[in-house]
Image 1 (cartoon, rainbow, N blue to C red):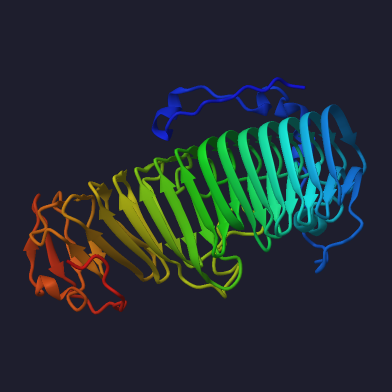
Image 2 (cartoon, one colour; image 1 turned 180 degrees about the vertical axis):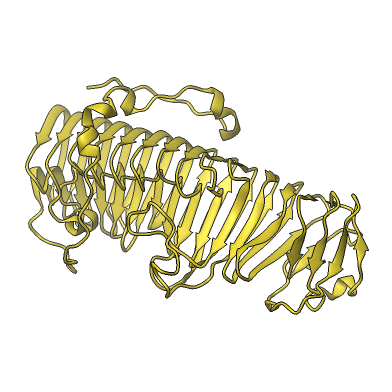
Length: 469
């Protein structure tokens, strides 16, 4: 077994100078290039009920067991190494698990854990400590299924190659709690920490995650994600994928994304409401030239950003769009891919943060941007395509430095003199109907610009004013 070592993580903003290791430093991805090039087949029939014939080489059914210092493996397709099911309780330590063999049906693998190295299901409880899991050909590593199923994973090392090979994976309202996890996935759509329909709950602490395949995020939220002190890199995916009304919370995390955006929150079918993103003392870095820090499509969502750093090569903090991602998670769908979508509406509450970059909305989407508690923003808001709507609110402790002219619907500032806005010669155009407190006047801004009422006949969004003084 590979030796385990506790990784002590400092607050996110100091992490960049600290070297970290992940399992790809031990098992080189180049050894499994062909395996990682495999794609999953989605053209299969959906199964509506849980199958009863889950195969495994070691089964614990409605029993209690403790195992330590063993090495187990499985090589057959659709076969787990371990199955803990039907109210069983399992304690395992110092276990080395190797799994190869394919998932011949992606639906049974995704929704019921077929072919997962470790499958814990149906109101069972499992405790794993000092465990190594290595999988190839596309297999989930540690899977939790069902209400009242809880899996505790400590001091564990996870390596995978092949498609749809998530590290910690929960579905059917199952729960996983992970501490001191090192996880690497090299394959297509293989996220480090993932939930699946109808939802899974992942709690992850003091860990390192590295995903390299297309569409492979650090976190895939279908359910709830709560992460603390995690360093992660998603080479060809975002930090977070979130589909529908899910909740993702990251605290003291340092994350890098290489495709699509730092966060991608969307609805894969009818637009849903209630998606939540909570970032605390967390740093995101997006390295693509067009990648935003946060992206929202076909969703109504709320994001809270407290002591957050967003470093974007694109200079774009937030995008809201009439769009979603494709099935392959490799680009944003446009109207030709799916014409039955709705504009995104997102409210972002920023506290104790210094942010640089723009807000961009497309196709009648809405961004509401609220700055408070000594926050600063250097940037502007503008339409990427078609009509777009922006609300901005500032409290007396926060500052806004404009980088281009900006048109706002709801516009509020606790400092009614607007002395906390630095124009650099740029102007704010505000909707006088929604902002009667300005009296329809043109107000001078420091730096030579002005705030003045909209004079065009462009369509006005009627909404609720936020942060009214």
